[in-house]
Image (cartoon, rainbow, N blue to C red; front, side, top):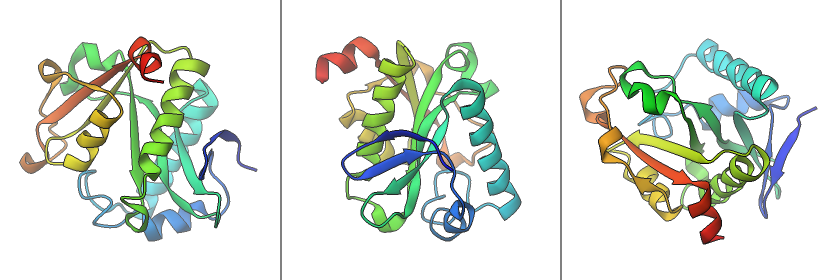
Amino acid sequence: MPEIAAETARLIIRTEAPGDLDRWMEVMNTPAVRKHLGGVQERHEVEAGFARKAAAIAKDGYGFWHLQTKDDGLLIGHCGLAPIEVEAAGPVLNAGLQIGWSIAESHWRKGYAMEAARAVIDLAFNRHGLDLLYAQTSDANEASWRMMEKLGMERMRELDYVDPEYPPEENPTIIYRLKRDDWRARE
């Protein structure tokens, strides 16, 4: 039985449920969704990612949760918190936590990513007591960095880096941050 981390007007933010892997392979492991995330993965890679998500949540109380729509019960993506574990990112970023999200293409431009991100930011600052969150994306992923800006995140150009795991067109990795006090001032 999945654990519910949070609910929004339209979403249940939860741990893995039966059937999620098959649904993920169908709607999340697509060229469009994975365009800026390293490309489509083999099933065993997705399974390993699910195992990492579950282990992080069990260990830390946070991680990347699955997003399920309330109206039809469909898995449409994930959103969550994770350490930044990229050597090229440097010590400042590797000491911090990042927020991230990904939504099925059929649910793009409907506000689901924003709704989920706001709920996860609230969890980060209010339940988990974090003072600061980072977000990172490629400069080419305009939809992602525009959302970071709409969330009130501050661009941190001095922390940008080149990630050797990604091709030149997905570099540099650009960094945004959000401080708890700034978030609360916007609420």
